[in-house]
Length: 437
Image (cartoon, rainbow, N blue to C red; front, top):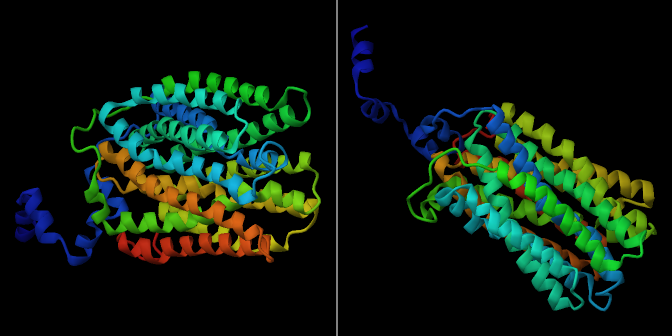
């Protein structure tokens, strides 16, 4: 009794130092350690859920819009850019995806330092780039307006919305972030259908079809951006946090994410073109992007709910492994029914990759004021996967093996990434491989 009472009277710091084992020291930089220093999170309420819904609206306009790239890819191949190779055209979408994720390197720290007001200038600029895309006719014009400027402005708009949500949730963070990313799924359904109807069923032409998309996005952003609010005061420390890369769990998570994203984005880009190559009509092929994103909606919500119970890294790793295995089967898919079923299954299993990856990155920040910076730096490096994967796959399409080579490359990349998170990232983050981490 005496010993225990003496221990209870020790200063907190002395207790931590005396009780800390070697195993606990390794866990200092692990994902769950944020809970020790976290303030009280609201875990709900009108303000918290309005921020989550605002995030969903922003994701509808940004990541959801990028998820419709398959329609643009197939349309460009048959129209304005028919003289270019599929690989060359895919560089536009790949650069756009790379830009939206790499812009997080700036967008995340800006949110941490200046609050939610930083979302407005890039949101206006993003809509402007869509109008500029509607006027493009040459390859370099599409590359600049849609690939570079569109991606950068989307990233600077998206990151503050994503970084605001985790400030309100800890135990329910997976659900809240899953709800936000599910907005991208809804956008990935609506945008391809709207584009397909406007491009193939009307006489509006490419220019006005894209401008109508710009008006739609403007309305949603006008409603969503004011809902994004920071809960915590601005961070006054360095703009970036290089010390984060000394944390083994954080750095290894980024490495695994690069490989997973490299494989995941390939079917997003090429499923419509693959369907056409198998005899599917262009009209039906354009709907594959919508089908994929419709299936990804439950694929983002259900794993997000499960991740709060069974572990964020487990959910992310499972999504990577399942996506890899399914993509390896892509080469055997034949007929319209087979392509549609594969598209729906791929949408479901891959849906948790983006939501799971961002939640895991957010959990790495020990101080909630650093969440935006941790997410931004991590997503910037992860964007390398989206930059490399689709163009490499485009080159493989032109080889003798065609889409078989694409399936092997993309499937292996996602599978390796998922296994890396399970077997390497979890132990480095202080978890046992089979634990609920």
